[in-house]
Image 1: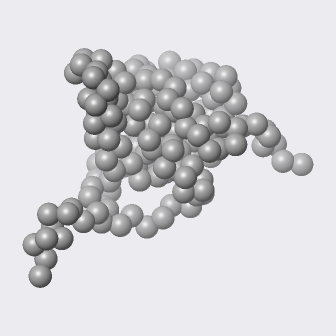
Image 2 (image 1 turned 30 degrees about the vertical axis):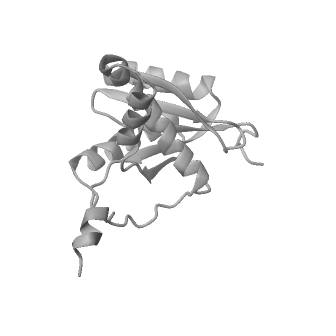
Length: 163
C-alpha cells in the first residue's frame, strides 16, 4: 500500500539566499498558485516553517528551481540550491526534484511591471510569482522525476550573427 496521499500537492520553490518564494499545485497537479515569500532566518526556524508548510498544504513532493546560466552550466547559486534541497529532504522527508528556472524572475518582474506594481511592492511579490511560473512549467512538463539535460539557450541576437 502506498503512503502517498490521494489529494497531495506539489510545492514549487524559487530558492534565494535571503528570500524563498513558494507556490503550490492543485491536487490534480495542473494549476500552480502563488503561496508565499519567506524571509530566511536560521536553520531551526526555517525547518519549523517548512515542516508546517508541507503539513498544512498536504505536500508530497517539492520542486526547486535550478538557477543555471544561459549556457546550461550550473554555477555557485545552483550548487547552493542543491545543497538547500538536500537540507529540505532531511527536514521534510519528501522527495525533491530540480527544474530549470531560467528567466522565471525576469518574467515575474515583467508581469508585475505590466500590472502597475511599484518597485518596492514588486520586490515582495517577485519570488512568489517566479515560484508559480517555475511550478507551472514543471506541471506542464508532466512532473518529471528525473532531470533533463540542461540545454544552452540561444539569444535571438546570437542567431542573427551566426553565418
